[in-house]
Length: 287
Image (cartoon, rainbow, N blue to C red; front, side, top):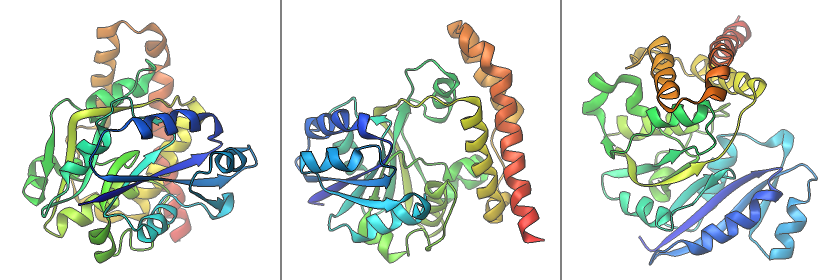
């Protein structure tokens, strides 16, 4: 591998640009690196700011944006050997993030994602402590009986794709997925006999804060995804929703985070009813 392209998706993301630019240029790697922004047009001044910086960017209309198709198009059009997908709220706080991700890819590993932390002390912090442990893991088909659905867990908030392999296996199959395109692709890679690596050797700070309304909408999209992709229903979950909730509660109490404790029940209800409503919306549309 000689080159990587970092693709950052921006939505009302003008305020994030200075940090993204600084963190990208601070990354230490021997690979040729480039930065490409995908801007959802909202009229917030992002395009003007990027033009001023002479940055490489492309624009997609708000109504044309797709979690899967927009990323797929950008990856397939890239000329780099590997593509790093990054969301605007993921901070590359460690200068070895890109290099560590790139080192994951080889003849067997075709997709890798980085450990995430959340320093905001919201409930997202504790979800990430569970979903992104401090130990790295390479996942393949042999782990399905023990890990179940979690075998395919991945996050393209900060992930790297072997571009040639992505093209070879037809990417996201040109599907317009509402979310979880990362999980969809991880399953493709693993079932094809290749591997997905979770790299915990370094990390990014996923800084977003969700309101209850945003949390409900996020889980609504999760529900839609699992409704649209019933092939995932054959895999067991290592933790039930209730068990996971209690694990989060335990971490909150351990840190004695009163604000997070106050939001715990409303947040769990938003997750449950959001996902349920999303699944129902798919079932209703199929009738």
